[in-house]
Length: 162
Image 1 (tube, one colour):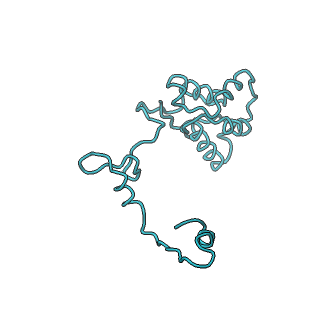
Image 2 (image 1 turned 30 degrees about the horizontal axis):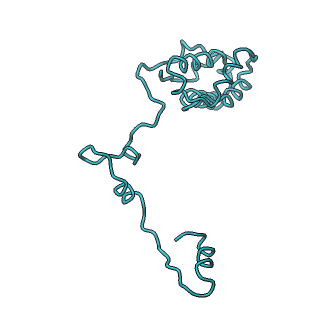
Image 3 (image 1 turned 60 degrees about the horizontal axis):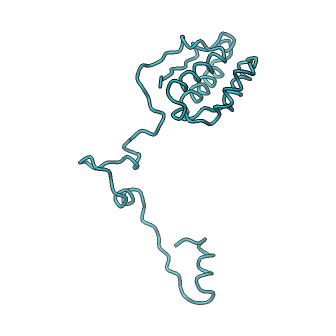
């Protein structure tokens, strides 16, 4: 996938005439539309109102078909073309947008803070016990007293947790 660098400079002239605050918000919304894991027609609808674009029903119908479809499920070519056509639909010249040549993945990437991909020093993945030892804080364990009303009272009082 291409990585789009959306800045106020790539916005149409009627949007660049707006205050800087509004331009920055529009850029953030466009970045969200382009970098999200899936295509969101709701974001596009809001941008259409702001850009005051005349809806082209035939093209918009295809956009709406892709609502909530993950970009990775579309295939790289279709996803890139969908993004390019969406930006062009809003009046943004795709050739003005800086596109970095590096390929990015829209899926989750490994990071040291992400325990799903956490690895030991020797490169092997952490075991579940190692992950739990790192993540879980010691908890207070309450042992129920057996007596009047028994365990039903205990679980009701402690909201079903031990």
